[in-house]
Image 1 (cartoon, rainbow, N blue to C red):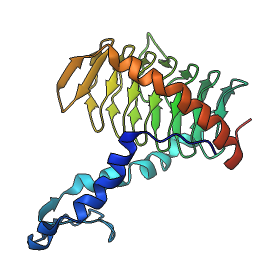
Image 2 (image 1 turned 90 degrees about the horizontal axis):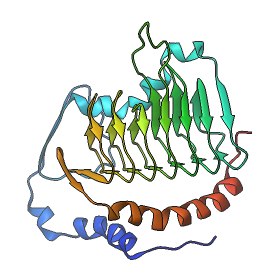
Image 3 (image 1 turned 60 degrees about the vertical axis):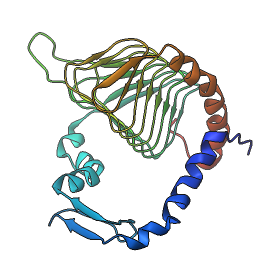
Image 4 (image 1 turned 135 degrees about the horizontal axis):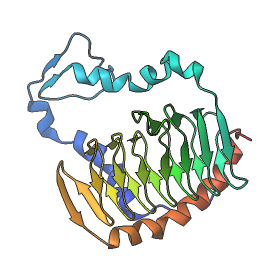
Length: 247
């Protein structure tokens, strides 16, 4: 199909090759310590002194443990998909979920409205293994608390979102985690592996990176939007051609 690949893709593509071609690797003494219950695949490439603890296992089985939750069988699934949305059949959806116009949900994305509904706006992209799960605690004054997501957001592979509010035009990058009862404004970037802790609020146009570091970058929104429409256009051509869709 029609594919456009920018310069940054090249740098990422050659990074692994250039790392493994480093002759100094042959000089490293490899001492690998793996916790008894950890799982390390044989194909993983490891050099030097490395210790892998129990948490490695917990991350590995996260998706499995979510889907093994017996309470999912008790949820009544009411899925509303707008006419122009694309939701792949392999996406895993439980509970009351509404998906707006133009939004794209990849195969193996997980959306679970466990303790309340999830409302997703228009033109969002939800990639593989993203988890959007409503786990907010209920009380007598509010028997249901909804997750509300705005428009033109990108949720990258493996990110986990439990926030009560996500604005518009944000990028939640790979394996970032947004805990329950958090809020994210508009035009933000949550960098890979970053954690937004319970109760935290991220204001508009903020980039979160390197642990607790954050900076105000209004141009981050412009950079995201400059590619987002092209991203949507490509997915709207390719996904229906290669996957069955939820009606």
